Each structure stands twice: as C-alpha cells, then as structure tokens.
Image 1 (cartoon, rainbow, N blue to C red):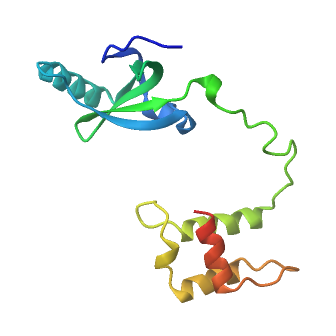
Image 2 (cartoon, rainbow, N blue to C red; image 1 turned 180 degrees about the vertical axis):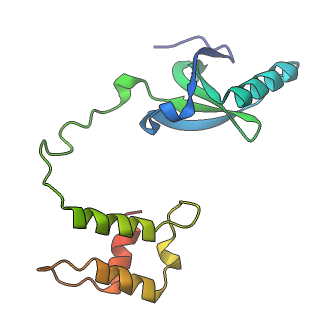
Length: 163
C-alpha cells in the first residue's frame, strides 16, 4: 500500500520507554527540526525529557507508513522504527510445552556464572579480556558429573559463540 508522505510524525500516545518490548524495535533514526521549527523542536525535547515519556505514533517514509517511537537521547530526538504487532512472530513452537525442572543448586551456579561475566556497571565483560586463570575457574565451575571437562579453548569458543 502506498501512502502519501508528509515529513511529519503523528503522535498518538505517550508511554514509559520501559513499557515497550524491545522485540518491536527495528531501526533508529536521528530527527532534527525543519528550518523555522527549531523552537518547537526544543520545546518538545525539553517537555519529553521532563516527562520521562516517549511518543508513539505513525510516520511515512519511502511511501510506506510505519509505527514509531519518538524519544529523547542526548537532547536529540530519535525515532525508533517499530514493527506492528502482527509483524512479530509468536514464540509458539520454539520452546517445548514442558521444560525440565531445574534444581536450586543449578540455578545458584548459573547465577554465579552470570554475575562473573558482569562488570561493575552491569554490562557483560569481554571474553577476549578474560585471563587464562578466569577461563580455568569458569571451566572448573562448569564441570558436571558424567560429562567430560571442557578445555579452556573450548570454553572460550562456547562463550564467544553465545555472544
């Protein structure tokens, strides 16, 4: 379906950014004011910053209508092109209907591993930056009775592949 373009974003709602499932985001675009619209742009940026909300609406690009999320990032409006709900694949069939039970000790070990890969600011640390000693410790923690021990190189490859 072709839609006539208008260089505008028709905002229909304002919500907290955290309420939007990231699966809906497709692409990001920086948005600047048209000539003569600088004050309106600045007003919208300041108001959205102060409210802490993002705008949800529709826009036209390349003769096609899209859903978008307009948000402020570093005092600049950013338009996140979003998928419509009917464009998102349902997770049915991906995960078995019944998952096996997991013991408390296994969960504790997994949490320990996750925490071991987090830096102080909460982001994942790089496998490339892991020392030989850290990889050896991780391989020891991953030892499961009845399974062969992973070598340091196998563990590094597995962690790198999981990125």
